[in-house]
Image (cartoon, rainbow, N blue to C red; front, side):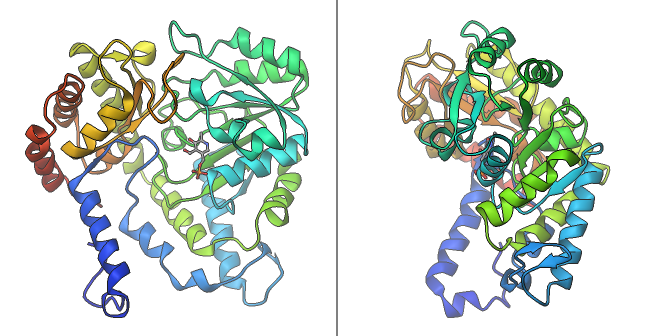
Length: 412
Ligand SMILES: Cc1ncc(COP(=O)(O)O)c(C=O)c1O
């Protein structure tokens, strides 16, 4: 539990303390299969709750608008240095973005300019809101066009990407997604970008950790700019980061600050530095290999039990279950799963006729349960539960076995 006996919080604010304690218990008792979540280490959490949260450090190391920034400078430089070690071949790192969305907006403003043309993967095909969706600033501030995936195999159709780019002539082509379970051919994206004179931006928010460990292909050295979140497979604190080739770094730095943000969240940057340090140590590679193996096995187990998986499997930590041939919606299975103790999220599948709050799919991710130490046997239990819930079995009958796994495999 987070709150120890020395914590002043329960005395001072019992209400918030109680909610936080309940969240600890909820996470402990629930198996998190939400692909965008993970459990960061106690060391990362400690850095994030440190006193440096009080410090304003507008600007960049050595060029701040406030005094007293020498320690903030050291921490930010360390985070940048570790980021560049981790993603070897990257030229410049900006560790200040508060989130993946602010990283993307800043990068796009730097690369395309207001009103500039951009092309990204459609949300309903597996992309992210911040890749040009009309409800996002990226769809409102930029002239955005989107590419999809082939309905028959759920994979990106590079011919379609090329066609959309030739028609739209974007300044930025975005490669990356939120519920895309296959590797992307970054070299092919770069070739298309070159053909139309666009810059290639890869958003690796999801596979960042797998990529850092070398267990999936990396766009570093291929894409001009790489954006990511630090809290998914990378297993750091909530936040964003941008890696850029030198030629783009100045514009990107200005777009982050002063363009889109004020003072950086120094406590989160300290947490990023700790997480990058963890990721540079050998156990991180083993962890990422297990994340990937668990996802592949989970997909296989679900297929063997008769469920459909978009694209027939996975190359990363994501398994996208296609419920179109069943009687249930993504929303129904999400609710049933929660009642059984599994935290999952409903997700559109390619060509989904249902609205986003209902959907015909389920997105599963193995990063968090692998952090807890789970392996093949537990993936089989999870596959049994998901299949049972899809077939209409009572969630209650699975509660005890899920709770037992929660007891056995503790949070970090
Ligand atoms: C590919 C991708 N980019 C960006 C983001 C946005 O990250 P954040 O929620 O930190 O704004 C996400 C979040 O899920 C994502 O999947």
